[in-house]
Amino acid sequence: MGIIVEKIVYFESGGRHNTDMALRLARDRAEERGIRNIILASITGFSAERALEIFKNTNIRLTVVGLRGPPGSPFPGFPEDLRRRLEEMGHKFCYASDIKYEFPEDVRKTLCRFCEGLKVCVEVTLVATDAGLIQPGEEVIALGGTGMLGYERGGGLDTAIVIEAMRSRDFLELETIFGRKEERRKIREIICKPR
Image (cartoon, rainbow, N blue to C red; front, side):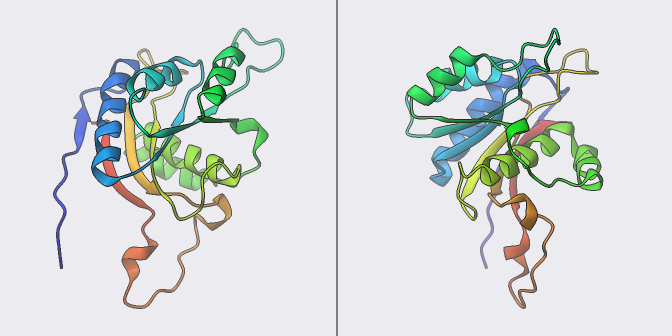
């Protein structure tokens, strides 16, 4: 019976100012664990641009989950030229709105009690897996943030976790595994989050 001792970084507050540190912590943990896929949320492209910079000399593939700007809205959504550049570099991209996935409101609210970024990490993992960009069962790192709306210093990334990729329809299933209940756990490690 072994133990694993890992560091968890707690940011004093959530928001965009934590983006580079969250990405560096995720990169370091990915390299330690041999994880080759990083999933991240990026609404305006800021987080995706920073990820391209921080992961540029690694063998790690990024999967970016973006949002489209609503028609007639001042919110532009994810930049199309950045999406093309990501794909040309061998990374993956999808719009969350193009993927039909299940994520019950009670689960969202519960995860937000830890921090909004944790909810986003789980959600982008479900989206990327349902989109077929990540294989179910693969251990990945997911990054999310506090969100742009309703927060003075929101946007960017401030939360990172190690998680087993799964389809959204399977997320709430707790299969009966006698003697191996640890296999039910899908969120494996918290790397960083706001306090």
